Image (cartoon, rainbow, N blue to C red):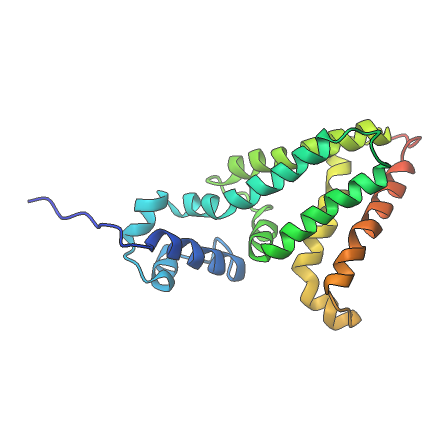
Length: 209
């Protein structure tokens, strides 16, 4: 008689996702074992493979909704006619939506920051594909609108990097500078970032690399 397969219990998939989101964002993907996730979720270890195939598959599922929403924002930014509003206002509006997304999903942002640089063979292609969906439309729009000659590898990190660093280092910055990151702060941040990004980009028009 073949061994009986583990059957999913109601809500097991959601509990696994929540446990993985919490553990990946605090301990990191590499330091989190599937047994840790199963224990926190209160499920049989086999349920992780049943629902997600592997730990890498679980991480991809944790991040997919976040990436999907992020990519939609980029698509709307790219689609807005360049002449409709001043570029600074267009970029500030886009940054406002990104910041709102990051504030709602800070755990996913932390996972993204912690895991992007890791060369895990099971995740490298996935991360590259999803990041291209986000970054390339943004860079194309800025290159076209602003007229910057900067290649993507120079321009991209100047836009996404500061936001990722902010959300990762926010507790430390608050302690060091005594800053309060409230709704008022986040209401002003997009305009400040748009001005800094565009002034920097405008300064590169005649730069010879």
